[in-house]
Length: 170
Image 1 (tube, rainbow, N blue to C red):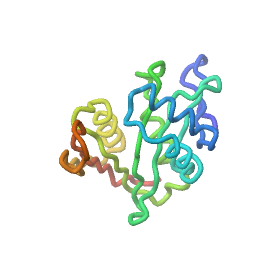
Image 2: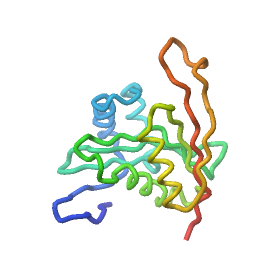
Image 3: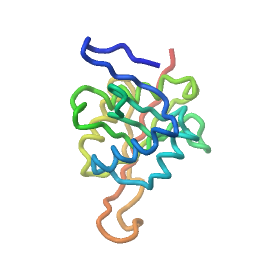
């Protein structure tokens, strides 16, 4: 499923990931310095949760991804695990477009809320989720999800829970 380009030069293609995209998702997460999960996680997300994940390619090169899943206990909530945007695409609204792509899918037809966890120092993600709420004219509730002391070792910040919604379906 291709997205209408913003300009003639833009040729971004938004799709569900295939298992073959898993390695590229892992490579992009590593390149961006994101919280790096095992490569298996990216393969698993592409294989079992493709309906709620997005990859974006430009000239067949992966330049962005979202990994997300619908919470088993709350079928009205999609949880966004990770958002990655290549530096070449920054400032073009790609992260917002990927989140909207997830929310517009048939698999999210009953979704009323989007949740994610974000560290206090991650200003870009906090702005992304607040902007999503603002553009959808809905609430964004922030609360502590996991305190620092829950993480093993040292150096992991607390994780704040962002709960956005309810989204009104047309």
